[in-house]
Image 1: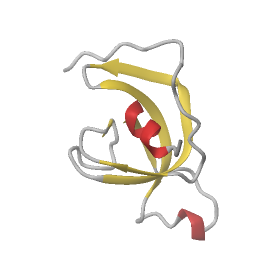
Image 2: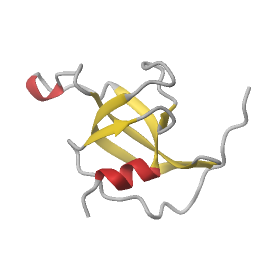
Image 3: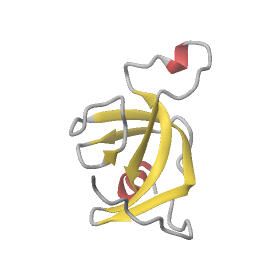
Image 4: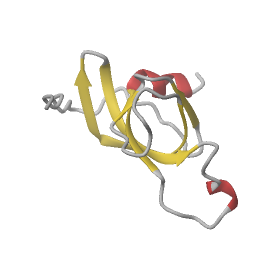
Length: 100
């Protein structure tokens, strides 16, 4: 079993990623998702960024994000439902998703 990366505090440098933002993530840019096979490309529509759950390892800082798998989840066209994805996303992916 691998050792868990340390928790990082305070929660600085996390951009404001609006709900509905589409994240396009290559393998290695996301982790800890039981629904999606490790090492695959993943698109996700953000619902919420959990700013209080941050980890750091040799790949960088990671932030807990919840949302809907795009395009397989038709969240925008059906009754509201809980996010279908919960995973850790590298901070640089979040920064790159926000225009600026």
